Length: 163
Image 1: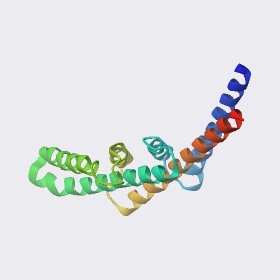
Image 2 (image 1 turned 120 degrees about the vertical axis):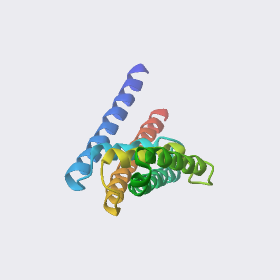
Image 3 (image 1 turned 120 degrees about the horizontal axis):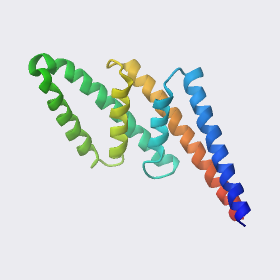
Image 4 (image 1 turned 180 degrees about the vertical axis):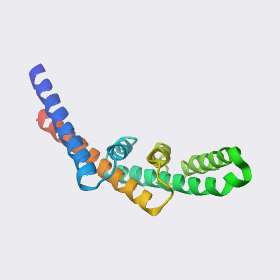
């Protein structure tokens, strides 16, 4: 029995590793998006509700967070000449109020997703643009799809082991 459990675990580990490495390779080679941004999408899938519907909602919350980050960068550019170094305080306060308020919205209310998107945008060091949004959206979507595939593989192996 222990050998079967170890064998199933190895199948899951190897399968998920193949999926992760394939997604990473696609990110870099085919889509030319950063691997770390792909893993933002991967992480978002596991933030809550491990199924396709919740995975799509989680990804949408990440994309809302990216959009908030882009808007924050634009507001920073406008406020910095007026407020100087204090512009960051005003912008972070406003974005935090928005994100925390959205956490109470129906359906699209994944606070972790919003902050993952914000972090992804600022970590990208890209100027605020539609191109930056598109790059991060593509990477996160690839990661979320890979995570769903890996999770589905795990469930299939576990179901087969139970029979």
